[in-house]
Structures are given as C-alpha cells and as structure tokens.
Length: 456
Ligand code: FAD
Ligand code: 2HG
Ligand code: ZN
Image 1 (cartoon, rainbow, N blue to C red):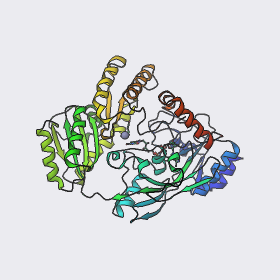
Image 2 (cartoon, helix red, strand yellow; image 1 turned 180 degrees about the horizontal axis):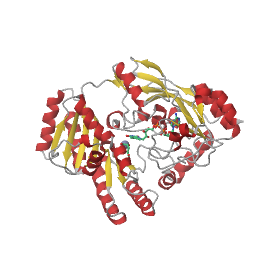
Image 3 (cartoon, rainbow, N blue to C red; image 1 turned 60 degrees about the horizontal axis):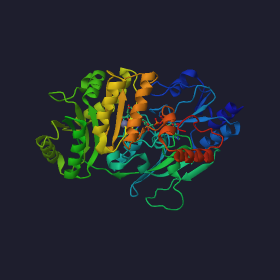
Image 4 (cartoon, rainbow, N blue to C red; image 1 turned 90 degrees about the horizontal axis):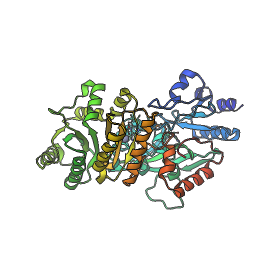
C-alpha cells in the first residue's frame, strides 16, 4: 500500500526497486556498512519530499535521506532490516537564484557541491566550501553533516556559510526559512537545528548560501617540514607576516605521500629528498607570487621549513591539490582502516601525534599510521591501517578518542557521527547534553522515522 502511494507521488522517473540500480545506495563509500531497502525514491520537488515523508509517517515507516553517499561514517545507508525507505535528493538539483549584490545563492539540496562553486565563479563570486568529494557530494549532505573541508581556516564550516534553509519535518510539514540575511534575530535560528543533524531531525530540501568576493590570484605551495609541530609554528609565523590570506593549510605525512604515490604514480612528490611531513597551502597574496617566494624563503632560512615548491600556474596547483584530494581514495585502495576524524586545539597537534604514537606502539605495534588533515583547524585524520571490526581495532579507536577528549578535543571533527560513531557520542558527551539531544529528537521526530539508528 505505502509503496504504491510512494510510486504515485514521485512518478515513474522518481523511484526504483531494481537491485542493480539500488546497489550503490545500499553501501557506504568505504564499503564498511551494508543495508537493504524495499524501494528508493527520488522526489523532484519540495512538495514531493513532503508528500513522501507524510505517507511514510502515516505508515510508521523509516526514511534514510541520501545525497552523494560520500559519508565517512555510514550515515546515508539504511539498516539491514529491509524496511527503511531511501530518499535520494539528487533530482532536486536546481540553482534557484543567485543575488550578485547580496553575495548569496539559493540552491536545492541535491545540487552537487562543485556545480554550486562553478555557478558562483561564473558570477565572479566564490562559494568557499571545498572538499575532496566535491564532484559527487551534495549541498544537502554537506549541510546535514556540517562539512568542513580545506577552507575552514578562512571561511568556516558549512554552517558558517548558510544564510537560510528549507526543510521537511517528520510529519511532512515544510519549514521555509530561506531568508538571505546576515542579520536576523527574530526568534530561534531554526536552520541551525538541521545543520549537522545528519538527517535525524528533518530533510533539507534547499538552502541559501553565503558567497564571497572572488579572492583572485591564489598561490599554491607545497612545503616540506621536519615535524608536525613545525607546521603549527609555520602557520603561526605566516599568519603573523601575511595576515588572513591563508585559504587552506593541510598537513600530510611522508607515509601518506607514499600511499598516494603508489595509487597515482604520476603524482610523485616533486622534492629531491623525502621529508617526514609536508604542508600544502593556498595563499591569496595580493602582492603576488614573488612576494610569497620571499616569505617562504624566509621560513626556510629561519629553520621553520626544509624546502618549498610554489606552483607556477593553475595546472601545477591542480596537480598538487590532486595529491591531497586523492588521499582518501588511495587509503581505500590500500585496504581497511580505522578512521579517526579528531580535533584538538591547534597548539596541541604535535603533542597529540606524539601521544598517539605511544598508544599505537603499545596497542598496535607495526600498524601503519595514515595521518593527514586540516591542521589549521586542529583537525587530523588520524587513521590506522587496521580492521575496524577487530577487537584490537576497537581498542585503538577507544584509546585515540579518549586521548583527543582528554586533550580538550572531539572524536568527530567534521564527518559527523552516523552509525560508525553513535556509541561514542553517549560516551563523550555529558548526560545533560545527551538528554537535550534526545528531547530535541523526540520533539521533532516522535515516531523515530528520520534516519533512525544514526547519531543518537
Ligand atoms: P551523504 O553521504 O549522502 O549523507 C551524509 C549524511 O547526511 C547522512 O546522514 C544522510 O542521511 C544525511 N543527508 C544527506 N542529504 C540530506 C538532506 N538533504 N537532508 C537531510 N539529511 C541529509 N567531509 C568533510 O567534512 N571534509 C572533507 O574534507 C571531506 N572530504 C571527503 C573526501 C572524500 C573523498 C569523501 C568520500 C568524503 C569526504 N568527506 C569530507 C565526508 C562527507 O561528509 C562529505 O563528502 C559530504 O559532506 C557528504 O555529502 P553527501 O551529499 O555525500 O552526503
Ligand atoms: C579528507 O580530508 C576527508 O580528505 C577524508 O575528510 C578523510 O579519509 C579520511 O579519513
Ligand atoms: Zn577532512
């Protein structure tokens, strides 16, 4: 009965129950979580999403919203019961409006991140959110996970770049807060409820996003350094000398470089020698590449860096960024890994890595560490080449999360909680925080039909 109703709501182009067509939506990007569903629906409008959710609510059937399915924690995959409906947002991919003077863009949730960046660029504006999955992840998924990426140091997370939101509640009601204002103190800021809620409080159907002036000439540099601590000192030094023009500041271990090199042989690191750590940075320095060369030369002379390469043109810059954006893929090709998306205060990055090394030496001697991340935001991907399903793997994860927490950090910096980290949320958030989260969940989704089994 429900299935028939859903098919009628979305029409023949808006559903599939063909096993081959459903398969990519029933497993996560890393291949760690598998699920089943009786049907996948792909509504083409907010009204259709509302009708689908209303019908599911009446039948008491759960819904799993899905964007590009690039979640790193199994957030967009249904459970194995075969009873949950997957709702793909991909057909809702219109850019509704771009206001050049207001520096804002209104987009549907299924827009691919890269398409939004391109639309902004065409209007001589910048949509700043940028991450390795930008060719396939969607704005709805970015907002639902409060995604970070490489430009947080300069522009903030997805949350900071959202002005307004449209969402469908668990009973099918549409809440339209699609305002494009920088200032608005009229009541609770409702959009914040849905950003970072991973599809558990509502389904995001559209958003108004902040644009920035196109920063113009962007210089990419790859800098070799002796230690992770040097990266933090280098960042502090650069911020002191060239101000707020650092758009990205990414740390990559020498081991991770080697991993990418094996996966993409053409991307060999262009240094004469090998170094333990590298920083990849984008700087928009109005004074030009020559000035930046002098600044970087100064850092080498001051002993803050070992060597540096500056991309001479866009192609060279893209080649350097390809190395960075291929890390997750190279790691996936190499096999199973524990994924630890942690954050600590930037000033404690080196201490975290040193104490992490000690833990690994005791708990998992010989297991390769795959360490990289958004060091300017204190966010490390402290991954370990081990089976997450093993007892030893679970011990390592527990110890690493405990270390990050003890150091004033978080066990989930930018990927969200999904199903992979659900049990840790209870452990690392206080009883009163969990209770408030449960109160919100119960108030907004009393039947527990929105992405059940995720987050909380
Ligand atoms: P999905 O994976 O489809 O969904 C993610 C979660 O959001 C799920 O819980 C889902 O139910 C929910 N959801 C999806 N759409 C909606 C909607 N419209 N309404 C309500 N809920 C919804 N993340 C970072 O933060 N920074 C990075 O640098 C980064 N790099 C990545 C690189 C690669 C190669 C990959 C594979 C992933 C990366 N990620 C990164 C992880 C991932 O969170 C992001 O790619 C992205 O934000 C997820 O978007 P998506 O459309 O694929 O969402
Ligand atoms: C990145 O920064 C992503 O490349 C993925 O957040 C991190 O694979 C990971 O652990
Ligand atoms: Zn990341």
